[in-house]
Length: 432
Image 1 (cartoon, rainbow, N blue to C red):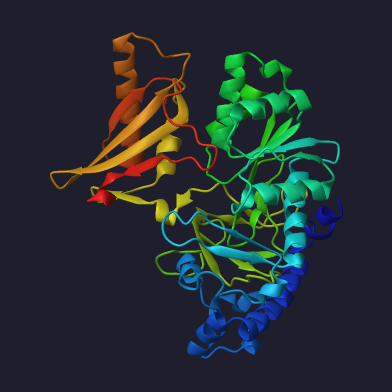
Image 2 (image 1 turned 90 degrees about the horizontal axis):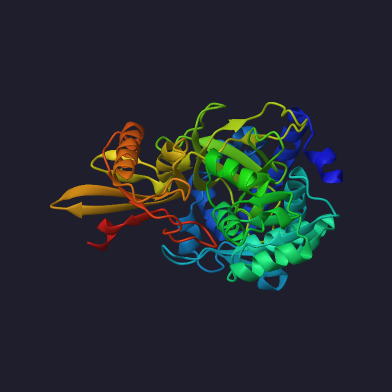
């Protein structure tokens, strides 16, 4: 594909030169078109001409989700409404929705970036791809849809909401690729296993995103469905799916860094981290017209690698995410990430990837209960066996988190499956 050869195999010097030219143009653009950025730059005595290239990016201010909410709905748009071709928005579950606007050119670039990612995962014009992300204000459905069309694949715009219909169409249409959340794909696998129809699948690959997933979940998906699974990353504020994706070697997600400039910072000091060190991922949108963002703090924790990948691509790669800054729970003075629990359960063969953390406060003391779903192959009425499994999990969790938790084993397929992003935490302390 042209996009792979032209951008994903550029030398580091060529990429830096391109990013610097686009950054200079971006800074000048937002200074003259977005009052929010003009005031921020003026407050620190910064003019567009002070930014010579990406080496000067640390002079620029950060942008946060709160900035988008404070300027709700269109305060950060850089073009008049007549030039906005489409809007998307986050769910707004923790406050006002964050609204994103796209010009016609933005949509074309988005489709190209998603096409790069799908191509990296092996999708071609000969594939039939079922898009099972939600359509509408959520960016997943339409983002994957137009990217697949850009490749020339046949698209089945399934969305979510009717899993039985989805599996029927998957089998009847001979679907060869699917785009959805990893937890929902495991749910689909369970349905097909129950019906005894896994062997009828024509499915070859899955492009999963919108939520973090462990290496164990990745292996489970591939083994249970006999497919190749790929991780796609994006967030609505930056563009949507298509910001990064992993290749067949799964050694990190390749960033479309000609459009999105990545940084890794220490969330406490706000200073850049060294290459390979874990920190918060920050993006600057180098080519967006509708809602350009400078140094947007994603809250996602990862590291970055600039070495050439085994696949031959030279684009920067971000590692599998360690968690999110805002997902961190403080329980009895200990910092806990849900991803730690998931990672701790990886090698326990008797359980599924489905779990729920319930945090509460009793007599002014934080409590943690972790509900863990037992795999159907190992579930029985033999009490002693379940007691030993409970003790094994409790010990593993204590070692991983540095604090004890009450472990509650639940029957197979008891915990709620989500068609969108999986929910793993219920923090009852917020109700007090």
